[in-house]
Length: 459
Image 1 (cartoon, rainbow, N blue to C red):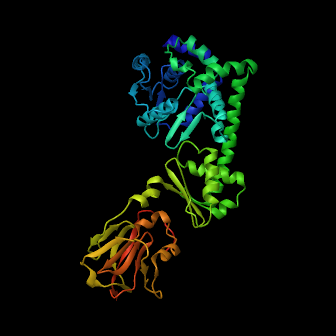
Image 2 (cartoon, rainbow, N blue to C red):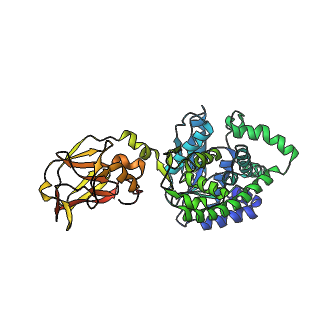
Image 3 (cartoon, one colour):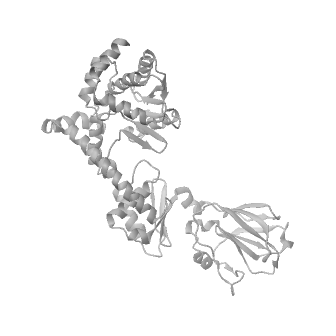
């Protein structure tokens, strides 16, 4: 170890070591570091450097994607190298789904990483300057905006996951030199040169051609990513202001949105649709949201589906709804239920959780307590004589005036006895109907919690 450390000090005296130590100090004192190690030259060098930088509180992990016959042997190679460096090692096999193998393998890999990370742990990856330049180039060819062209950050916060890439500003030539001087052994994955994959094609076919014309291309593209990261930070501050002015993660106010210049509208919609996901929607999907939903006719019930959510407009608001919630109206049908109520007991209906409570004013007669009452979903065409209003009027109109969202209206249920309407359970609360069963000092169901808190105004 002394000779290795001596060689290391000879080649690593300047800015890189200083930067790493500075960044290490910025992480929580109790943090542990999980090194993603594929067995390739980059990650094996990272493993050696981290064992010298931070000999305590580090572990390595090899993800076996099971896509190559030799993948299990590569795992044993990584585990053996870790044992020689006294670094604990995890070898985990994952199942990669069909489709785009590059994307699916990445998703499986990160899912496995997160299984072994505690809240204060840092995931350390071996991406370097050429990886950054390739990422920017591929995203540029896919039509990415600022967020995509910002590519990879040296310290990247993805929700609870913190990623550190200490070698991101290192040229691959420097990595090769250090790996040779430290005698770092590694494996060669043949897929890294298989031009069937986009990144390998970029590296093997496109990169040499462009670099022959632009020798400083790698540094230039890496610099462009840094500039995009600055622009992304400025944009994030503007987006935060616009989001605060226009709504919440669940709903945007269309009047406030329309007051923004069109580019800021598009950026806000793109970030809002992304939500907590990693990727923003394609530009075409944002344009569809604007034209097909926001600018649809006022009486249209237009909705757009993307990435597990539906985007629907209602009452000058644009709503973001989980797919299951939006489609529940088509699938959630309840048969007639027979309920008996007792004071101070809870009852759960489609509209939410209600508590049966006595009231000082007009309510339902205490004679109904303990009797079997019918609870049915509305079929359409019902009329209701709401207490305190003159005459009966269509229940549909009452629902519209209460601005109950269309995707919640299947949760509205009618309470009755002997075909006499007693009232209606809604996500806004219980509506008392005028009937012979109304009585002073009676009782009413009081809403405690709705199955969906994003409801319209009360009737």
